Amino acid sequence: MIDLRLLRENPDLVRSSQRARGEPEGPVDALLAADSRRREAGARFDRLRAEQKDVGRSVAKASGAERDGLLERAKELAAEVKAAEAERDAAADEADRLVLELSNVVDPEAPVGGEDDFVVLAEVGSPRDFAAEGFEPRDHVELGRLLGAIDVERGAKVSGSRFYYLTGVGALLELALVQLAIDQAVGAGFVPMIPPALVNPPAMEGTGFLGQAAENVYRLEADDMYLVGTAEVPLAAYHMDEILDAERLPLRYAGFSPCFRREAGSHGKDTRGIFRVHWFDKVEMFSYCRPEDSFAEHRRLLAWEQEFFAKLELPYRVIDVATGDLGSSAARKFDCEAWIPTQRRYRELTSTSNCTQYQSRRLAIRMRDAEGVRPLATLNGTLCAVPRTIVALLENHQQADGSVRVPAALQPYLGGCPLLASRVP
Image (cartoon, rainbow, N blue to C red; front, side, top):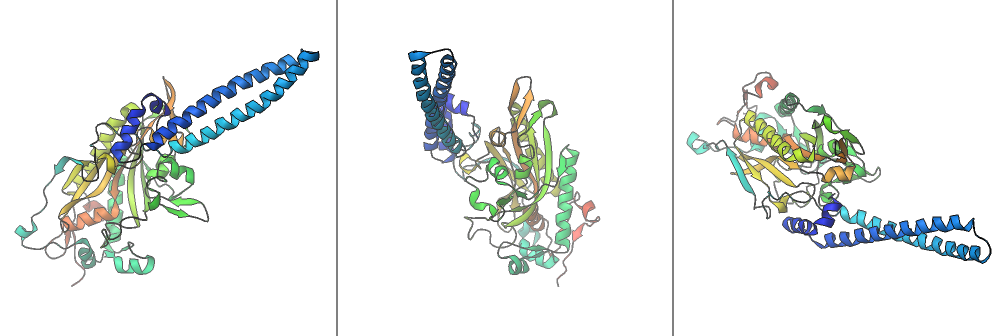
């Protein structure tokens, strides 16, 4: 959640952030009003409660008419205190509800605009010229069939659309990618984690996924639990309701988990293959750090994502995502998009977001340093979203005969195999 002190001192900044996101400004003014009512009612309650205590002490010393008057005043104060308390609590409940509706304040460096208003920060590598090589590239579905690696037909038969099986070399390829990603993360100082894929409502709400992203969340009604759409959720909630020693920061975790997404609003988009699916596995980086260090930490997460792309020898670009396309928790986000030959465009494979203190305030995660106890910053970054990475690998490294070259960095995780060969005549 946003800092209420910031809202009181600079409401125009919060309004501007809402406009940049394309979100309504109304909740800002409603929250300001509720917060004002809460503070006024709280001050009135404190004054009346203090007077009530004074009157109570005076009653014991008084007698006669004075005592009768004090008892009458005590009766009046009891009603006034109760009313002020009720007003304070009602305003507090409204303020607590409204503050959860506001998205994080965007970073002033983030480009303003909608989905197409991103800024390209870098382009690395060059897409292959398949025409010059004398053949038309196959898409990942056809390559997966030739390799015996992907089975979307049986996935749909068993689980419905946007599900799939990774079979044979496809399953081995996932395990190889995950191990490569985990090894890189551990080498960079991350603590490897296998977190739960089911979380309770406070964990899901605290990370900001029950707001604008709620339509894509799977909920188990009978248990009031949620399937996570990313390991970011259980990794963020790992230190929920804790105070961390600032000397221990940054704390960095690399979580491997299944991810579940309804993909609401994506009807007709990427229906072929495994690019946009309801379930996939992912390695996610997560960092807790001092707020003042979060901007440098964000660049570090991006650098680690780029390092992974380099190991896979994929042409890609880095974009600075525009404010209107940010998730509610993110103040700024960078995406790494790989070139997909058969689509002839760049597509997002990984992203990294600086959530500043937004999630830590919602999850009551704080740090203790020389300044006292205060919220810390949280950041997340995808290292490897398996299906999309497989799509990019197969299509970019395919050969004319349907085989696929294995990047050198990945070969040790596939028994030294330099080539995935076609298994279908």
